[in-house]
Amino acid sequence: MSEQNETFMIEEAFARLEEIHAALENPETNLKQSLELYTEGVKLTTACKDYLQTMEKEIQILNEV
Image 1 (spheres, helix red, strand yellow):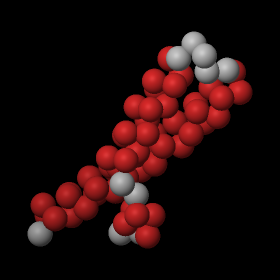
Image 2: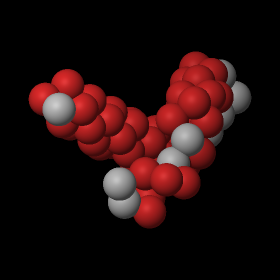
Image 3: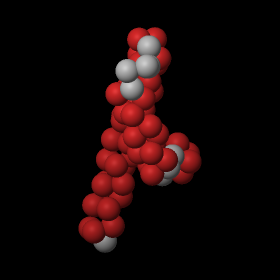
């Protein structure tokens, strides 16, 4: 497992994604903030996807043993 996966907490990423979603739905969030939040959300989503794929591969390896 890589160092990134050891420090990555998917639960924290999901919580942050929920915060981002709420902020994006807020009509008081301006365009610049929305773009920054969207960018952060895309990065977090990609990190979650990568993390889950890694976990899936590890589970498949364990099931083959």
